[in-house]
Image 1 (cartoon, rainbow, N blue to C red):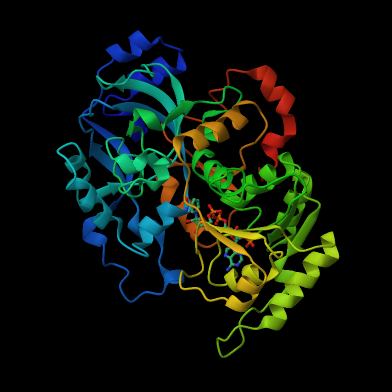
Image 2: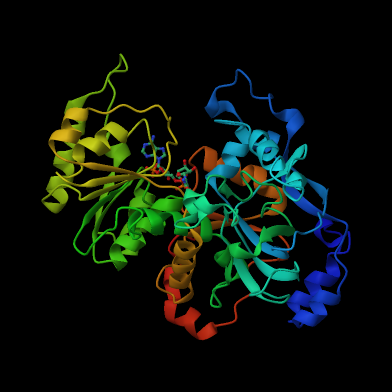
Length: 451
Ligand code: NAP
């Protein structure tokens, strides 16, 4: 076993997991002092100063190497990460944009002696994981070594009163692996016990690892009363409908009896959406919308053209627009949404300073909802739908941990579809399935995005 993941004492842990060892057996295997992880370095914080966003290259700022394993707090667990995934936040960390995440680690570090562990000169990135619990802190009640789990990324201070109606409202709520250290793109990870969810038994490690962040985000945006609270028959315009969050959004609209209109930028992506059962698709490249004129001002004519295209497809305006590209589409989204309808947004990939024509907004009594990830309950409900085979992973490719830079580069440059899985401790694809019957029942839907 020459592979670096098997050095430093990880081989026994991997063999035990592969052989189906009991929780007691796993708990008896010593943990290594160091483990393999993908990280960015504080010393590189300014490496992209003066470089245009599109020219920044995550392959140069993401490093793979050994890092020390921290001690766990009473409410935390150590997990063996079998697989993880690339999220856009890993791209943001690698670009040090719009902010360097080392600022977030420093702020977290000031909160308590346990939190101080996070304030390091390296940041282990990654906000998704599937794996196995190896150790639990003294205050952990519901999980034990040997449990097969997935991890959601909502890092909550449960001693803060503001966290207790909706933990996303917590004044110091953070995203694990983005605003905290010890993230999921690694062979081991440290997470709070209240981030754990049962691994869907019909999925491989890598299929199970790609869902939690994007699936939970889309669930809150569309299904939850905290988001757009979609109802049967709603027409939903979904930007980036074959991307990470968009591909789960399409499934939620179809499952909930709504009518999705997916916007994508290639014929291949159009095909994927049709295969998923999304009848109405707009190819934005073919349509060649130019929402901005040469001089940078908005072109209302083009918003109207998008609106006409939507009406030509479904006969009415969208009740909901699922918005995340931001600057490039936001004004059009506000314009095309139905009178009284809702634009729900969780991001601004193309730019966060956005303008829209307020006359169309107030005169037509529209609503704008800001949404960010999901609380534990929302994440758990979204995970349950995956467990039941009602929502499916949208994984298109699988990379090794050594290839995290390349995978992030592909996401940064919109070269991918759906989600990109990453094998961490799992030595190959296809492992980890326990419920073969449900897997057979779900069938080809697991391969919608595989290319
Ligand atoms: P993704 O996999 O890259 O998908 C985004 C899709 O948006 C792309 O596939 C692309 O589709 C479309 N797109 C990109 N630029 C566009 C533009 N200028 N105009 C129209 N469409 C454009 O990313 P993702 O994982 O879905 O994440 C999308 C955004 O949401 C990111 O900014 C991410 O950071 C954010 N996010 C936020 C949260 C949260 O909790 N707040 C959670 C998850 C993600 P086509 O080229 O096919 O149109």
